[in-house]
Image (cartoon, rainbow, N blue to C red; front, top):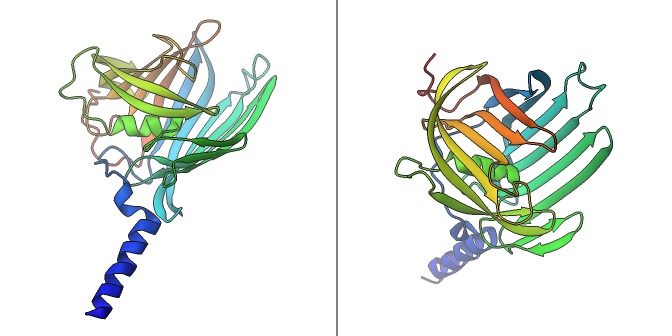
Length: 258
């Protein structure tokens, strides 16, 4: 009996230590290890660059399995004389709860560079960054993890204008990130023609998407919810990010028309 009590206490201590009971479980049929999406970045009629986002592996972080996600954005050599971009991001995303543990940002542009990292201590609810330590609520997202979490959402019962609010941590501040459902459309990009769900990420104060229409996202209307088109406003004009090719998908891409 004594041994059973000690064992139970040890198990409880282990659970408390690793926070198993503290984390939500998110059903994810949208993505998995091996997924790699390649995009062209177009400024008007000019192809200015390319972006690749992939999940090459799962790594153990803070005692939890985490997707290692990498995003690289580069301008094409033919566009470098106008503006040069060599930027990459990396995030470690909890497999079960779809929240971040680590985030890195390395920006290299013609007249600007920035290196930033953050460790999201999701147990003690702290974000420890290169700029300081900040309090965060449970399930706080970085910008990469918010994108992947959005892909797990169920939009089937939503009406136009419905929204889901996430908590986004960026630049030492917390922001409500609203994902607004705009309906459905069929779009054609280099990778094919797809039936899509249309959403708009919106931060009301500060952060990335400051006002309505700054960015609109078209995702495949199926379980995978792969982004096939992103339209983003920039200081002069807008950018279109179009899916060129995909590989290593977690399931069947049912929304492709041709």
